[in-house]
Length: 337
Image (cartoon, rainbow, N blue to C red; front, side):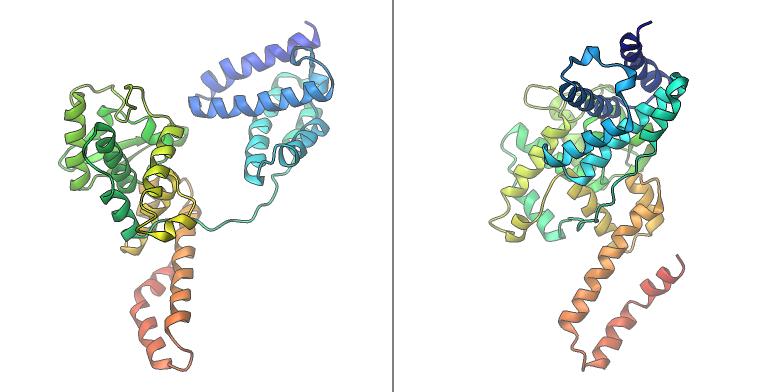
């Protein structure tokens, strides 16, 4: 088999057999890996002045990948996070290639060894309770889309679900109890059970009855006006549109980058501030590592420090002691982590 044909064969087997069958990754992951490889091969073909179908395994090396990464940040204007995601996807492909093309295993290994670029962690955006209430209060109930949006945002706030998890949600995943819960399928197809507030239960029941799908287990819950399941982009558009409508009453919203993931952060922060244990929040959100959830504590403590500096003059030691005493339980709990 010619080297050019081998490469195309490897690409085909990678997506159809390795990712889909052997690893069983989600369609969302496959699309992300496809986009990364498509961009890389297109860049490589253009740089070599060849058609993509004329590329061979010899063309795929660390130097080409590095040039591609520079291209992403320089010419395409991608941020470091996006650059790292593309590299991560490519490393998965080259790891597969190394197992299939042993003669070039060293060449492929050099790509696998390319480091992820360090990036600074930005401020994790979330909404205050009053901001959530205002956004919901401004959603009317006159149209089917209004009622859907109200249920959608309420569900996102209740569960802290990822946007793809909401898009994939089916009627059979909701159990009205008692106790009322929803089974959410997350990354790597791991499932978790999240409790539903009574208000969310009432909204969901009404919404499912309105759509006439309460007894149709396999139906997607959130759909567009054309009865097509909402996409990640559709959900993001709805969240951003509803948040923008509340700016006149909550001006601070204009300075926040708001999307479905903002509501996820909001859920976590409000659970933490309500005294819910970190391990439960981890389970609620479906985090793999406790360290991921721990970031919310860092934000909350930073807010407390800021509040102390603003409202507790350094000379007022008695007031400072009273405030610290009120947080004894939190400090003791943190010491036990």
